[in-house]
Amino acid sequence: MADIINLLPDNIANQIAAGEVIQRPASAVKELLENAVDAGATEIQLIVRDAGKELVQVIDNGKGMSETDARMCFERHATSKIKTINDLFEIRTMGFRGEALASIAAVAQVEMKTRQPDSPIGTCIEIDNSVVRKQEPCQTAAGTSICMKNLFFNVPARRNFLKSNAAEMRHIVDEFIRVAMAYPQLQFTFTSNNQQVFYLEKGSLKQRIIAILGQHYNAKLVTVKETTDYVNIHGFVGKPETAKKTRGDQFFFVNNRFIKSPYLHHAIMNAFSEMLPADSFPLYVLYIDLDPAHVDINVHPTKQEIKFDDEKILYAFVQSAVKHALAQFNVTPTLDFDLDPGIQQLDAVNKPFTEQQQERSTGSSLYKTFTQAHQAHVIDKSSNSNLKHWKDLYEIGKTDMPAQNTGLAPIPDTPAFVNRPSTATMIDDRWQDTTIDQKVPVQVHQQYILSQIKSGFILIDQHAAHERILYERYLRALQDKPMPTQQSLFPQTLQLLPADAALIAEMLPDLQVLGYDMEPFGNHTFVVRGTPADIQSGNEQASIEGLLEQFKHFSAELKVNKREQLVRSMARNSAIPAGKSLGAREMQNIIDELFACSMPNISPGGKYTYVSFKLADLVRMFERGN
Image 1 (cartoon, rainbow, N blue to C red):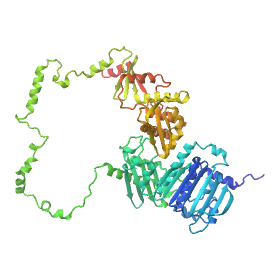
Image 2 (image 1 turned 120 degrees about the horizontal axis):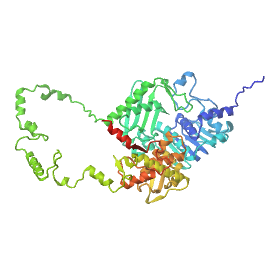
Image 3 (image 1 turned 45 degrees about the vertical axis):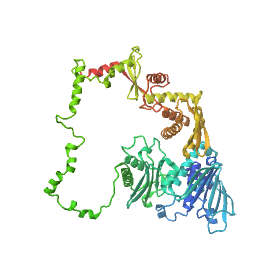
Image 4 (image 1 turned 180 degrees about the vertical axis):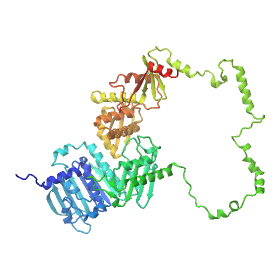
């Protein structure tokens, strides 16, 4: 019988390996930026075109490579980081497996130029589908420049799985931020389609965080610093008011490598317990430095998930460090004065207070000033007290009022009480002139709407009900009837973070159908000329920011299409919040529109919009005490 097992050709094996390492353009960005950091560069440039589908280029001023190394670096598992098995557990560099460049060369067209600083001439290599097409000397700057062109050109099926340019751009921005945040001492620039996205100067960690996340965090960061023999923890956490409903501003770095760790995230959430709502996420940028022997970073293809030899002790250290930092911010500050040793030698400290001195002190006018009779809160009970005038005033009011057989003290007929209706009277006034089955709705605690029905009454959650109404209204707009736009008298310019700007650009066509008149204005800004008619004018910035937060929340929680996420986000962001006072007409409109919906009893998020109570149930509730 013939043998059927064969070794895969190198180009196919490389493409299979590339499937684990290079999933999208952002994966190549991560690998190339990390290689530049490992090369000792102080200035790193990232250039992309067409969201990385056409070009991803990284230029660094690092140590470069020799002609032989330039050729060897594209071989599978060719690395300078590991020579023995023990080196695998002492890794302090970003890359070490020698598979990134081989994987990139297997699914893209690659051109690399590199030169060592002490070499007069560099090397240029062109590789296509893992095959070296050209290798020759060239003139180039010291360092390395790698171009990755036409990603997945030889694997069309993989290219079809790529998302829109805006979505891929968001992933690229995320990877760039993670590397730039880990190395604030390096200069990073990021250019997309010939427009500068980031220019990050060398500086401190706080300066880098503010440059990336926004200037508004400048006064809202709390320093975290904990040094022990086992681990060193430093970085920043945001004050409680910076917490958001969505993830995205959470960064863990272990030995300067970005990681995702739900376990350590839980430690920080515990440290913030009782300071934040249950569905909020605090900002944090924390750096954990510990011996590489305690960490296994070779458990995931992207190296973003790692294992610790003792997770529990690290959990305790992280929680303690964050709690200590928050305590210094929240608790009354401790004034740390150095005690002057001369104070201990004063007579008031080292000599006893004799009885003669006590009598002399208590007899002084200064002492009497602070006795109980001179305190502001003490009320004189003597007959000379002015309180008797208040009693006289009460007696006069009492004699002027007609007697009532209620058994309760009469109310003085003073201006404050004249013509003031009772609570029962006010309710009766609102409910009068209505038929038995159509009572005017009443708002309860500015959160619920109580409305009478034939069989009893219903209690409506005003926010959930309005969310359902808006959700169905926006769905109809996307399907066949665009929403009307309210034009602004003065157009507003919105300045957004790069990742948020990419997200808005992705949603822009649908936002325009939903009533937003806005367009890109360059450099992460948008001009808003109009908003949906049911959104208050002048509130464009808050409206867009709230929409972004809700969209990120639904993106993380729901596996639905982008349009569905957008509609749910707009409905939740624009719905009437709990705590807003409503008039009778507004409440009645909510009731009428809610029961005209196709699914009135459930909000888009799955929450009940109303609860009904029957008269029979009320009768039973009141008869239980008999």
